[in-house]
Image 1: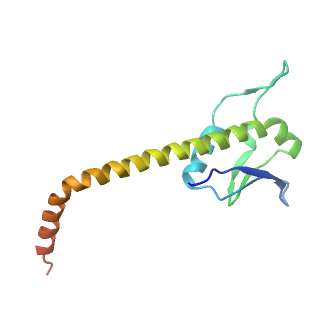
Image 2: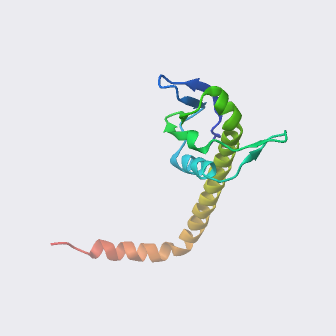
Image 3: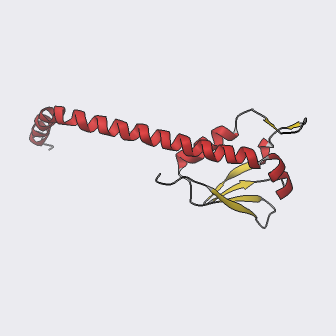
Length: 134
């Protein structure tokens, strides 16, 4: 993932669902990390004496370059979902970048060990070429 997924704005579809428009279609791993974060039981405290709970049931699904929220209007989204959505976006980007860095490190390590294993691989290839099927 060369660039982070970012929210570009809100929209409302013909069913009244609030849509968070994204700059790109998120990959599966990113969506999984977003869902994981969204599923956390934390509440978000406001700056006032009152604290509010994130309206977790509002998050519905992803659709191409959007995140779909149901059962909440724009004011409700802003009041009860926006901050947590922003945190979830950040978390999903960080998790995806961490995963990709770990994957790249594993690939580099495998490539380094591949040179050491090249003689073994060549011997295996030679044996494989001798196997015949009738």
